[in-house]
Length: 423
Image 1 (cartoon, rainbow, N blue to C red):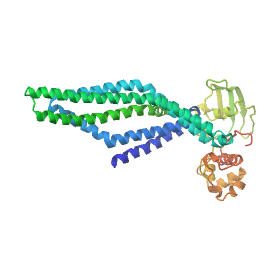
Image 2 (cartoon, rainbow, N blue to C red):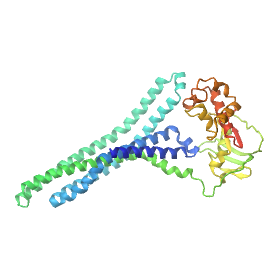
Image 3 (cartoon, helix red, strand yellow):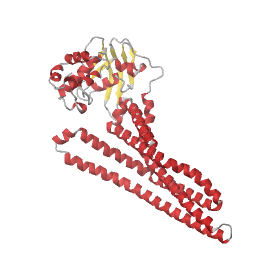
Image 4 (cartoon, helix red, strand yellow):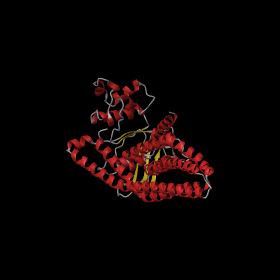
C-alpha cells in the first residue's frame, strides 16, 4: 500500500514539476521541438519512471535487501561453493553489459520511431477537419501503419538480443548448479561435507539465483527506460535556456516608445529573416508595418517580445535596450493579438481574463464590449461561461479573434501589437 502511494505521489510530483519546466521554456524552444514532441516526452517519461518506482518499491527493494543478507549467509555455509554463485553474478553482469552495448543504438532508434508515431497521431487529430475535407482519412491511416511497421522493424532486433541474453543467463545458472553439484559430490567423497549440507546449499543456491534473476530483470528495465528518458533529461538540462541574466532589471513606468535600430536576424538553415530594420513608434502613435507574406512582420513581433534575440542591432523601449530587462517585465508591457487567437479549452470569461487575472467580471464585460464581442457572447445560452472547446473550435474564426482582442484590451498594457490585418 505505502509503496503504491509513494510511486503515485512521485508521478504526480514529476508531472507537475516537469510541466512547469516545459511551459516556462522559451517560445523558440517550443517552436523548435513542437507540441507533440514535448507532450510525448513528458508522458512517456512519467509513465516510465512510475513503472520503475512501482517495481522497485513492490519487488526489488526486498530483492536488494535479500541479496545483502543471502550472499554473506551463503559464504558462511561454504565459501568454496559460494564462489560459484559469485562467478554467476559476474557472468550475469558481463552478459548484460555486452547486450546493452549491442542494443543501445537500436533502442534509441525505437524511441525515435515512437516519437514519429506520436507526432503523426497528434498532427492528424489536431487537423481532423482538414483530413475529412480532403478525404485523407484512409491515406493518413496507411501512413500511420507505415510508421508502426518501421517501429516494429527497429524493435524486433532489440527484443531478439534480450531474448538471447535471457537464454544465456538461464544456461549460466544451470551450469552453475551443475558445478555446485559436482563440487559438492567431490567434497562429500573427501569427507569435507555431509550430503545434507550439499542439499541445503543447493536449495539455498536456487533461492539466491532466483533473487539474482529478479535483480537482473530490473537492471534490464532500467536500461530500456534509459532510452525513453534521454529526451526528458535533455529537457531537464535545457532549463538553463530560460534563466535570466543575473544583472537583468525590471522594465517599469513604460510610456510606450518602441525603436528598432539596425536589426538583423536570420533563422538557422534558411534565408528567411529580417535585415537592417530601423523604425520608431512613439508613445501614443499607431503605425502599420506592411509587406508580403513571409516578409518578417511576425518575426519583428517575436523579436520585440524576445522570443528570439537579434543577431545584431538593438530594440529599445523608452530608450532602454530590451536585452537588459527581464522577459516577464518586458511582456507585461506588451499586449499582443496573434494571427492564431490561441484560446484555451475553458470558458469565454476565463480566456478573456488571461489578459489580467485580477480583473473583475465587470471589467471582463467592458473589454468584450470594446472588442465588439458582447453580441455573440450574449447570444450563447451560458454567456460568458460558454466553453470555447479545444483551441476555440466551438467558435467561428471571427469570434475567436474578438475574444483575443478583448483579452489584449483587458491587459491594458502600454504597447498594443496586432499581428493580423483584420484585428
